[in-house]
Length: 377
Ligand code: MG
Image (cartoon, rainbow, N blue to C red; front, top):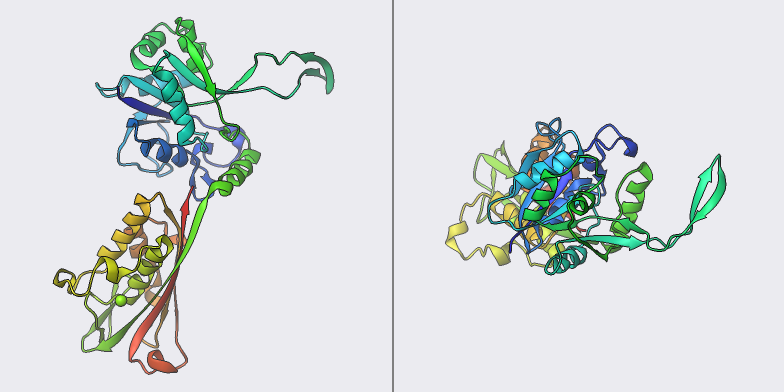
């Protein structure tokens, strides 16, 4: 049995406010939809991730590129978008989970519950029993009380066996409000699975604050620092934060001696508690002689990603009298950002002199200090 996850991200989300659709607005550190995309992409039981996009959004850079995702153009209605997703499943898929892009707090445990229920049921969907008293109201006044017995608040992901769901969509009138309604109209049984109070759907501006608060409760935030020094020797250029700068001398080292990039790389290793560059790329190993330092940085970034961390921000300070760093700061941020998959507004490269004091002041070498944050949600 293989399972596809279909994330429906084709809506316009106007009730949430903002200039762009809600699923692409930033929540904590990335677009709302990126959380669900990451959650399903990393779930061991999900073999295909399908993301249904609004045709207007496809050419934009609003949505996060996930190399393994199948991107599908959505339709006029939610139902048409889901059907487009179902039609994009690969031949080996037998089950599907359909999820709202605007529910970023879906957990692996909830996905597991829906999958477990699908083992013995045609359909399974999470829901939370209504516990508040329900009123009928009009003109700002209570008109009556609705019996809440047997009432549930429906959530996603909603899971189905693919073949019967496709048959249900083929027979659909297009009037149903969600996938469970489509399935039930075709006679499929849908089992209720215990939902999760925190699996909220972002609908209004206030929901962003609520989701961010919930997320921070379970967030793993790490800080790491890095410090590095390289001495000057003969040469005519230095590498600093990935940029080659002409100079009257060069920094000496086993690699290209990019002191800034080394400090940033060590800060990432430090936040992960995974040693430093010397541990991963021993100076005794001749294969790293003269190596471009972005190899080290990319390794540290990949190691962080493999442990579920994204980089929040980077702050790097270079300590030297010369060369002057200012003219190269923007290029340094762009180069480091490209290696780290990070927007340049999350990267800072600063420089200071040491007032002609110490080894940097005597221009014997360059020092660098860096701080990074890593975030796992
Ligand atoms: Mg170094």
